[in-house]
Structure formats: C-alpha cells, structure tokens
Amino acid sequence: MRWIFFGIVMCLAGLAHANPVTLVSGNDYAPYVDSRLVEGGMVTELVKAAFAHSHQTVAMQWRPWARGIEEAKQGKFAGTFPYLRNAERAQDFLYSDEIVSVRSTAFVKTGNHRLDFYNTASLAGTTYCLPVGWAATPKLATMLASGQIKVVSPNSISECAKMVAVGRTDYFVYGDIQVAHALKTGDLPAGSIEMADAEPLALTPLHLLASKAQPGSAKLIESFNEGLKAIRKSGLYAKIVKAHSTARPPLP
Image 1 (tube, rainbow, N blue to C red):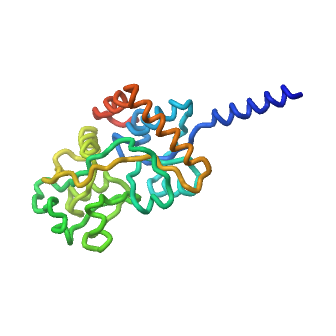
Image 2 (image 1 turned 120 degrees about the vertical axis):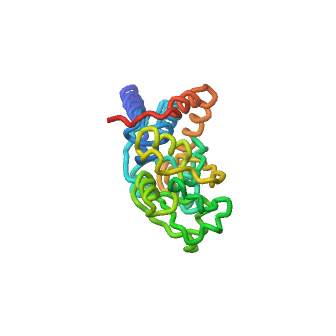
Image 3 (image 1 turned 60 degrees about the vertical axis):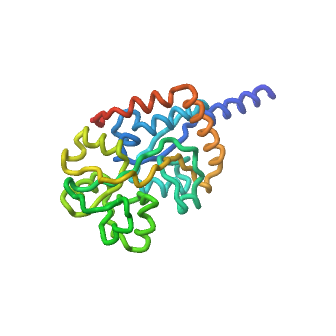
C-alpha cells in the first residue's frame, strides 16, 4: 500500500511539473512579439528558451495589450511580457531581469524638421501618438501627465505610424529596430515617416512580469532569471537574437 501511495504522489508531482507556464502577450510589436511571427517573435522565443532550461514548457495566449496585462494582474496568467518598468506596474507585479533593451526613438512625418527632440520642453502643444496599453517614455511622461502634450491612443503602433504619415498626430516613439522591421515587411508605407533628428528618448529594458497576487510568482521569476542567465552563457541567447534581427515577414 505504501508503494502504491508513493507512486500516486510521484505521478501527481510529474503532472504538476508537466503543466505548462501559461503566459500572455500582444501583437504588433515586431520583431519582439507577435503571434504571426516565427516562434512568436524574438522575445517570445527567448522566454520559451529560458523556461526550457528548467524543463518548463510555455503555453502562449494572445490578447490586446490592455486586456492582457489586466488579466495577468488578476492571476489569469502566470505572467506577461515584454514590459518596461514603471511605478504603477511595480505596485502589482514582480519583474524579471532584463530580457532585451529597446532604443526608443521619435518618428515624424517625412520632411517634418520643426520638432526639437533635444529640447523636450519645446514639445509643449504637440500631439503624441501612444497606443492603448502602452507607457510613455520617461522624458515625455511628465509632460503628458501635466497636459503639456496631447495624446491620441489608437489600438496599435501601425495605426500611429499612419496617423503621423497623414499629419493627424505629430510623432510616435518606437524602437528603431522595430520600425526598420515594419518598413521592410510593408507594414508601414515606405518613405512616409522618418526618424527624428534626435538621440534616443530612452534605452528601455523589457521584462517578464508576474502578479504579486499570484502564488508562486516569486519562484516563477527566480526560475526564469536562472534560465535567462543560462541561455546567455551558452550562446543560445545570441543565436536567437541574431535570427530575429533580420526582418522576416509575418506568417500567413
């Protein structure tokens, strides 16, 4: 009887270990994450590889950004990614180590050289396109909060680019690698937008988040961080980043 009981316990433990880590992310953030990209994008593949180091599989779900992070906060998912750190999110989530870092740069309508991004105070009265669920870069967040900068929030960064291209908003802020990817894959009309003459507005680390209200979140983050260090050391991290750095069109 004792051996039967022991066998049942071991089987249950094996099943628990086999349960995938259910994570949520959003679309339209190529080449980092998008359900239509190979492996779900660069960061998705890095996250899967990090968890695989501790023999954990990942089950991905895709939601609109605002809905996904809210459901992760409620504990409907073990975690969500990729997100930058801010004070509001830090109240509800634990953060992993940095997965990747994004050079966030302003983009304007081609030929628009009147905006001075070296002097952000001069941007008062302009209109910033910021998709729903996205956080503003720190240099602009204060001006947004005080109402000095107006904000328009469509559902995606692609919509922001189109609004800037036709002059409905003045600029959007996005990673330079991401815009290069979007231009090469035809997601943005060639020649309609250009990088503003400015230094990057932010060098933004992106993280995996796990809800503080969810039991096991601390252990999840610890396991992920260990895996992330391991794939960096093994060279797998660099291999994955290189594979996604060359633009490739979304899957049908």
